[in-house]
Length: 132
Image 1 (cartoon, rainbow, N blue to C red):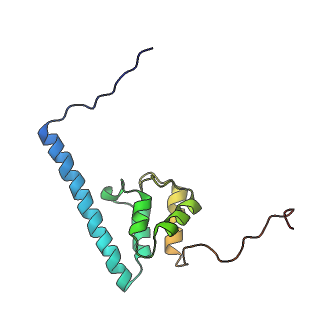
Image 2: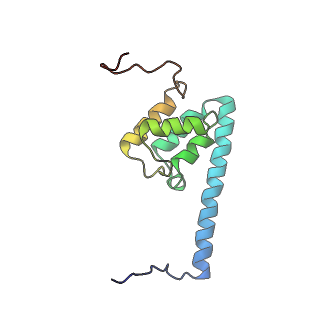
Image 3: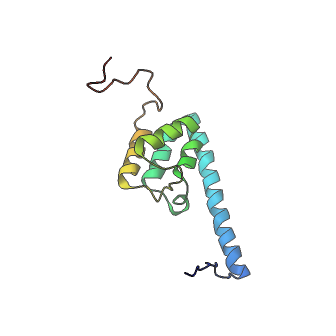
């Protein structure tokens, strides 16, 4: 049994610089988008803006992790992000481009619904046969 070692192809300095410039441009666009979300929190609803991005992510947002996007929305922290991701069945490492249609539509619905995101304060009802 032989094992193969995968080696990344050698890249020229120009190719590495092109990749670095592309990555920096994506980071810059994400930073600008986060600033727009903060501004939207002051004058409107940043959740609607995030829902539109999830519905049709542009090229620069396709590699953005869904969990990172949600945390950048004002009013959604780590706890609410975890709740949303569990609710629609999405891993923390899933990118926007990697969402299934069901997951994408569920997330858009939850963001656009206008309902508070979080846990219910009422206790869940037990299924039949489990009553005390």
